[in-house]
Amino acid sequence: MDVTNLSQFTELALTRNIFSLFADRERSENYSVSAAGLFLDYAKQNIVDSEFTPLFALAEQVDLAGKIAAQFAGEELNSTEQRAVLHTVLRAPDAMKVDVLGAEAQEVIDTEAKMAKIVDDVQSGHVRSITGEKFTDILAIGIGGSYYGVKVALSALVPYHQKGLKAHVLANVDGDAAQEKFAKLNASTTLVVVISKTFSTQETLLNATIVKAWMLNALADTHSSPADIIAQHWYAVSTNIAAATKFGLNAENILPMWDWVGGRFSLWSAVGLPLALIIGNTHFNALKAGAHAMDEHFKHAEFEQNMPVIMALLGIWNRNGLGYPSLAILPYNHALRALPGYLQQTDMESNGKSVSVDGKALNYLTAPVVFGQEGTNGQHAFMQLMHQSADIIPTDFILSLAPTSEHLANHDALVANCFAQSEALMQGKTLAQAKAELINAGASEAEANRLAAHKTMKGNTPSNTILMERLDPHSLGALLALYEHKIFVQGVIWQVNSYDQWGVELGKQLGNEVLNVMAQPMADIDSEKLSASSLALIRRYKNNLTQL
Image (cartoon, rainbow, N blue to C red; front, top):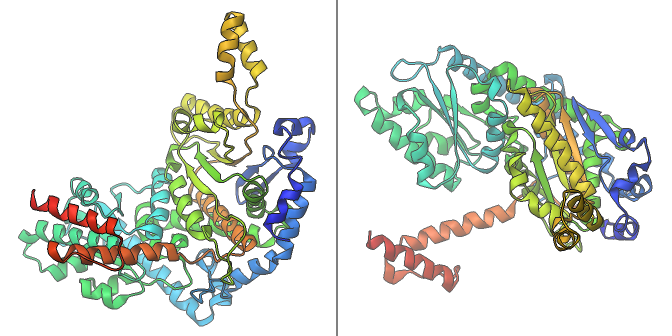
């Protein structure tokens, strides 16, 4: 059996009303689970016990338990790149690192110690700028997996930022993004961290180059050599030591990465240096501890009580059984506003595939389209479509029970909106209900008949609600690990390699080709690799430059 067979179990689900399932008074209790400080309520999903049976059968058929054990043991799960998938070991105790990595564990342990020392030295002022001042700003330069994890954690953990240090992240190659950062930064007190696994990513190198020029120009009157300035102000995280040192970085300031850590799962490695510099070693370790707690739950809990497995199977049910193409991520915490973008990459870059691990075309769809926004803003934007279009969009609501601000009335309203939206998406509003409301509000029969259809909402939208007691480093680590493992489980069941991203590589290749063509004189613009449309656009661009 594969996921295409799920449709034979969905006939009742496609015709029933989710709200009717709450006739079972124990449904809410039975359809919830706790792990690593998180609570998942999935009672509003359109599923009953008997429909979980084929899902657990799928998990057994693909040997999910064996695949989970293989991942944590360091087996080569990334088959196309012949790599293990071991980001989880980075948040494990040292003894576990040794068990899994063997001799390589010492390099990981030493790197973590070196990273921790950098953090302590910068925060204490033991390491200072070329002008002898304490650093006030950290600028992280990276893109993709070298950006999203750091970005989401920096914005989520603002209450844990250390006094005297501000964080900035530069990813977009658009020069305006860099200019915006320069306007906020003082070069004499800015520490730069360049994150690039290969030190060849086009956007990152272009941004690093202009930041380097900006800093050297701004500090020219210090009479320090460019080499001394870069050595004092710049760190890098990369596997390509030669390229990083050629760029000008001091080899002692380069922290390694490992090929068994995928970019979008790399926050737990030295890629997290900018975050650790801002929140400190204690809180960075708490982030990793939260993720490790979820790892342990994922490894050991029975599937029926396994939070990542349950979320993954529900996603399979919604995508392949019920045929819903999207997934909305709605964090009802301003601090988690970057989470939807992070999960867009983590989910769609991992499982957005149409070929199996064996290289065969799949006859079913895989990753949903992931989108979202912080609540309550989304309610006044795309959630209109979620309520009243014909599309059903499964949703994850995410909420911290404790407020992170002192404005308790606002937090009460936020919580109320979160719970109300999941209820409204499920219940909807029938034509009869809409008409009755209008009549009760004083509308005439004719007016009620005219407007009622416009006020109906389909309802029956399934959702999860994920609660944390408070948004802190531990709970954020658990939350990120939860989604990592959910994505892993879905990749196993869809039988895809969740850890390569050749679609991203194609864009890089053609981007370099376009740049090469753009460098040619107008009369010589041509390429067998590009369409006539792209060549015409390049000519229009170059022609416009001549008129500036």
